[in-house]
Amino acid sequence: MKKNVYTVFLLLFINYSISAQSIKLEGLQENEYIGDVNLMPDSSLLALSVINDYNTVKRYIYQNDLWVEEENSLTQLINSLSNQHKHLLFSIDYKKLIVLITEGKENRAYLFSKLADDKWSLPTEILKNLRGEFKHSPPNISVDGLKFYTTAYGLSANELLIYDAQKETLEKSIKIDEFDRINQIFPLNKSAFIVGALKNKDKIDSYFYIQIEKDGSYTAPLYIPELVPDKPSDLFKISVSPFPGRIIVQNQESKQISMIEVNERIADQWFQKSTPRQEFSRLARQEAEANNYVSPKGQYHALLIGNNVYKDQSLNLEKPIEDVLKLKNILISKYTFEEENINTLTNASRSQILTALYELRLRLNQDDNLLIFYAGHGYWDSAVEQGYWWPVDVEKNNPSCWLSNSDLKEQIRAISTAHTLLISDACFSGGIFKTRGVEDLRDATTSIQLLYRMQSRRAISSGTLSTVPDKSVFFKYLSKYLEENDTKYLPSTELFTSIRKSVLNNSLTVPQDGVIMGAGDEGGDFIFISNK
Image (cartoon, rainbow, N blue to C red; front, side, top):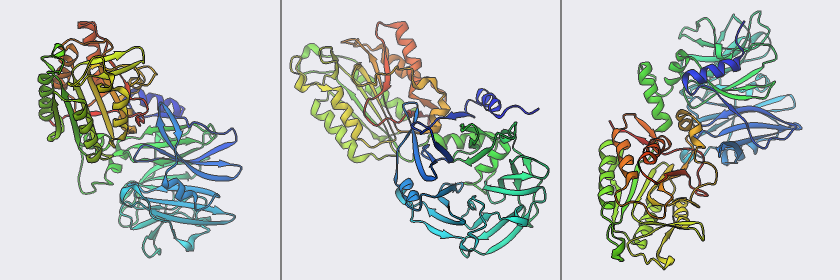
């Protein structure tokens, strides 16, 4: 007897770190039905919502450990078509979208194309001569955008119909004798497909892997075991995702939405969508896949601030500038930071720090990553529950020349980056962090954090004391773990876990980390990428 598929999910999750994740959408009404669910390249979800036959497409983002609704221009565009029955099917590269609208007995299929700046074209109707043939299942588009794949009613229900995407004329019909009917077609490359179908003598629909040869012959359909239900009431609906081998599965009976990983053979075919002429070993595919999750389109930038010499000489320190220069060398020699993208401020005033932050607002974009590091004096004002940096022009009894958590938070919020990480080797705790516990993100596996690829705005502080030692134990272990790291990808949450344990064992300070409150964090993480 087959294992229940959700047991399979659990076993896969344990064995492969990221294979299955249950997805719960927030704010659903009691009478709300969820249809098609699609995972997008930015790791948001598009879900079809049905309330009393009124159909809308909603977008959900993963924020504060919850999937919450957030509209965007694509959902507005799709919903402008109709509020009637819909189905969505994305091309494997997520540059094309086909939306099927069912109004009465008539089906209409519309094609959207992705433009620059994450915008989408206005819809154009496709395959108009097949309006009645789609069976509430949209046609799909080939990897190269030159073909449409559809199915049909009646005696042709087990035929894969291949249309020229430009002329919209039938090129080829391939009858799959093993099937009674074909419901959905997901092209993985030019010849490999996942097919949702009812196989002869089966009582329930299943999903199969199949290859179509140039002469029109096909390989024997292979069950995809991760998608074989244990009982007829487990009616599954799937969508492919932008991440090779990951599939969104919806149990239409229990309404549970999950993400699973299919077997290596299918994942290898999937990956060829972007590199059809290359052969990849399993290791090479994993490496490239990891880059797909983690590597930004933009660059890594750093603002490093070290204050030694203060206007008030009683505050002078010896080590901060030395620490800043050491960190700069580590970032350039070991990680993907270019020297021209690192701004080093030594003995900086409040005005100089704010000016540098403002310049970053002008230079950086939403694909870039930013590391801000400060070494110098800090102060915690318990009366107002506010932390401050003390620039070199500080006056101890004049808060107007201090640099507060609030000032920094506002500047960070205004800098458009994919990920921003603030590391403060000074007192900095309190109002900068969200009130929830600092363990929140570390509960999830690193691979899940990478998969979501949500924006992050995080901070790490050396301690909660009103002063920190000139010879910083915190910096000793920060530099140590950055230098000794031998992994390709190092999330800031993993880095902090290592630092915290060592600092607690060797000093009286208690390092802190967490999300910067109100700065635009969406649950992601800053990833140090080794250049070795």
